[in-house]
Image 1: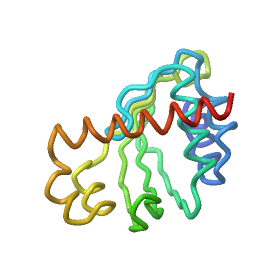
Image 2 (image 1 turned 90 degrees about the horizontal axis):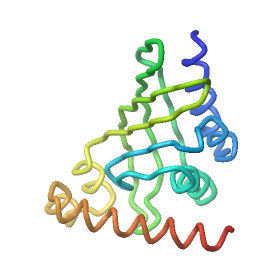
Image 3 (image 1 turned 120 degrees about the horizontal axis):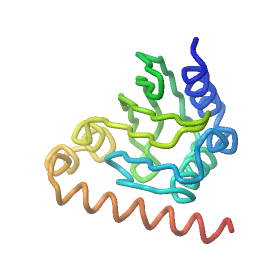
Length: 156
C-alpha cells in the first residue's frame, strides 16, 4: 500500500468507527470537498460536515475499497448504509471518491453518487419524481447548508 493509499485507508477506517476527529486530521486546512448533497465546502466547513455526520449517525455502516492511486491522487469506492433520519427510510448509497493529496494531507475530496437513487430511497415517491431535477439538488444543498450552519454554531 502506498503512503497516499494509507491516508485514505485511515480516513475510511475512522469513518467506519464514526471518529470524525481522526478523519479531519487527514484534511488540509484549505480542503475543498464536494458532493451532490452538500455542494462545495471549503476548510472548516468541510471538516465540520464530517464531525456532524459522525456525531449524528445512528446506524451507519460503511465499506470501502481503494481503486487506484497515482503520485498525488487516490480513487476509492465506498458504500454507506443508514437510516435517513428525516423519513426513517433505509439508504444504501454507492459513492465514487476522488482524493488529491499533497504533503501527506488531503487537499481535495470529491464524492459522486446518483442523487436520484439516493432521493428515491430516502424520500420515496417524492424523491423518485423530483430527485433528478436541479430544483431538488438546490433545495437539498440549502437544507444541508442550514443543518451544517446550525451544527457549527452549536459546537463552537
